[in-house]
Image (cartoon, rainbow, N blue to C red):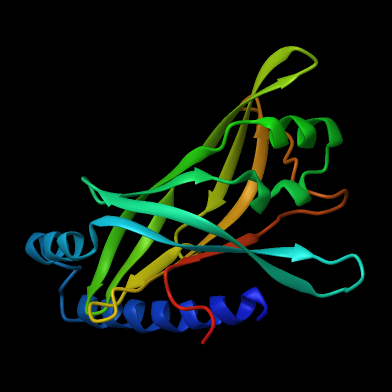
Length: 209
């Protein structure tokens, strides 16, 4: 299977085209899409979808990262909100640096991942994604805790929707895992690291091509 960077590269090209268009519009004193254009974008993509979630895994017998896929469903609802139903812990569990926390998260109920959308192009429909942190209720030694998964956003999370094929392509990047709302320790970080980026790709495109 392809490495995830191949899918990210394709998405990056789409984002670059859209963002360049936005900057050109800004130079023409147009600060963005009109309310009507935003409404049209939303009405075009709203609905329920089924596809694949792609994320990186490491094979202990191979130094390169590889791609794993999971079936996923998502919906675009009112208020330009996208909801990924039952976002799986498998996407980041391998990276958790505390074995006790890792075991607790493995038992936790999957929670939805919600994100706001900011449209910036009409054809194809293109948008920035602003993920909302996902909270997991867990138990450690019979004590209740909350683990919070955070994401990078701004220029890191974006997507597109093709009017003709009705294909979604989206990228989001996980950045941190906190325990009990404390940001003093990122449980996705290895000793000596300063930051982490764990990319995800979500699409209903035919991945066999």
